[in-house]
Image 1 (cartoon, rainbow, N blue to C red):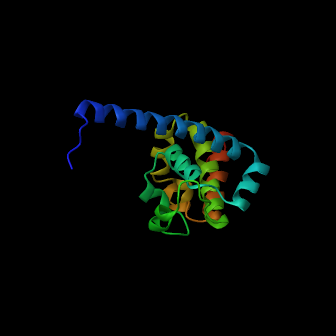
Image 2: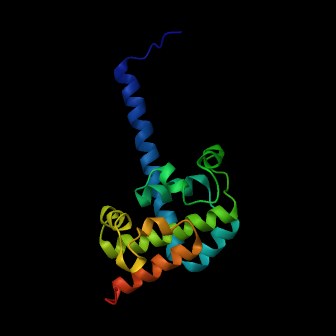
Image 3: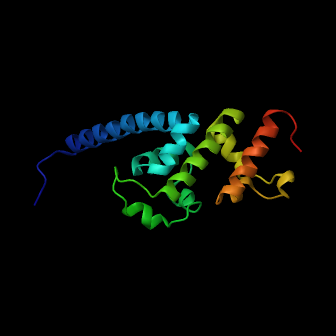
Length: 159
């Protein structure tokens, strides 16, 4: 069957769809940031599980793509892709996502931009034995180490 819509009409529909997703995404990102900033809310959300749309907002906040971000989770990228938009992720995955979101928010505030923090995360750091901080965020201990290191940088006691 041939579409009766003109290419211009298809473009307008697509543009409106993208705009709607962007606006919804920005609202979600604001919601996620408010959860990350409030420890009790973060604990509750980790316990209940976050929605896939919350997860996508966190991925967008980090500047990573889904494949890169999924490598830090205790489930596969394919498992995440199967979850419906408003379906809850399990508490273990939700907790890890929120830990990473908190780390990235701290880093972005410290370095001034997502790009600058991402560059630091992908550079060798002497106090980590010459390893890249990004390689530490696949478990809670590694995330705590990077949080500690960011705190030392923030207070001028970086080693």
